[in-house]
Length: 164
Ligand SMILES: [Zn+2]
Ligand SMILES: [Zn+2]
Image 1 (cartoon, rainbow, N blue to C red):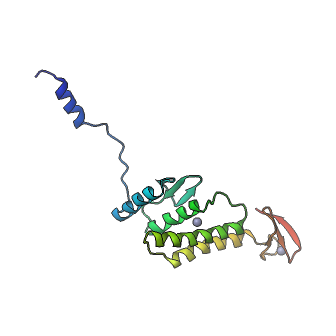
Image 2 (image 1 turned 90 degrees about the horizontal axis):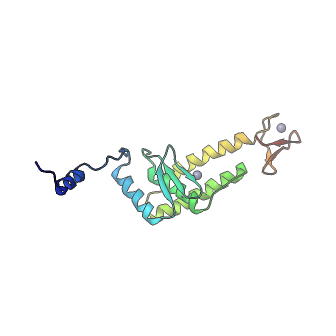
Image 3 (image 1 turned 120 degrees about the horizontal axis):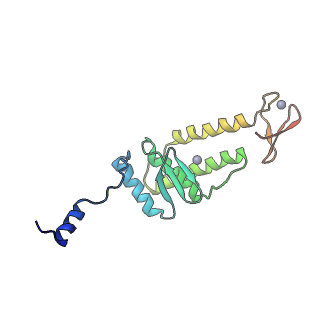
């Protein structure tokens, strides 16, 4: 059979270069939501990752298979929209999480997603525990006061500590 440009074109169209296929675990509902978010917030890049995370300045990572997908991705978006780039003090971090959940509630209303108080409380409690652990006096085990970004003060031992 004589070769022709025409038939070559057909063949190349039939065998497009294979892209490595990443099977997405996103449900249709979540994928639609993700696409809507990406359109509504073009300043940010949404990417699959191992957990929900805002990495300043522009990346928002999501865990595809999470049952709270929509709420948690809105939570990371809340961090992004609030400009939560750094936090030095643990108490500040707790406040930052509170603010982000308040913003998440707003975003839920805006995008007609049911807000989940219990999830927010559970998440905040993990931060409360973390903050609490971080501020215990190494000597007596009581809670210290956070006096600066580097130091704690135990009123019982009357001693200053460098934060770990
Ligand atoms: Zn958060
Ligand atoms: Zn102490």
